[in-house]
Image (cartoon, rainbow, N blue to C red; front, side, top):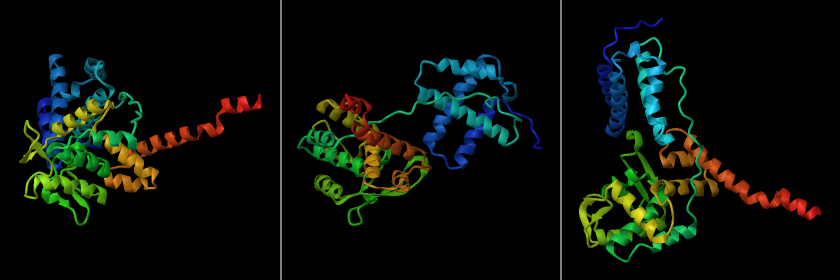
Length: 308
């Protein structure tokens, strides 16, 4: 039987937990997010006069969670999950005998259907890029997102040193969870990158550069994640297409790959997922679309009409 040690105040435990996250190699961004969620929780309980983890009851948790019922389900799910993980750790290291979250269920997330881009929509987006240095850069970004399935944060942190045009590979050093991987791309993507690099130059620095107010490339100044998101929204407005964002390119990459016979393991490794769960969601969306396409072959209404 585990021995329960004296329990420090909640604020001290949070600091120990965040140090543990750093020691285990979690990214600064992840640790910041955990810290924000835990300090929010500790602040709410402090307002009720609760400063000890051992004094927390389920009703305290329910009152805390009730503050967020107007937020999105994804946000509520994350707030719950991050605090629950903290209490699971308290039990694992012997500060608590049991977690107050043990009998509390997280909000259930809906299984969302992310509609992938059609070839025609992608052509519209590419055609909407002006014939300027910024427009050539934007076309290269669109094709790279589609051909590699990179996250927007991964794309923003690429440098010239990460690009191997001969081997058709991108080295992703700043993937989610501090993981690294290699992302292959096609010769078609290589041609778009070469056209952009002719304008950018091949010197060291960020692969995708920001632009000034006149559309000229600012060599050495990286295009940040928010800049990529803004250009995608701008292209969406220009073409009249809704939901033009980087994750939709990622979903399109996965769905088209599965449609062309890629194994789920291939897609998992190329996208940098730690588990196959997300890829199964992509495959599920694809299978549902395939079933919908076959529906005319067995439509009960059509069969009823044929029988009459």
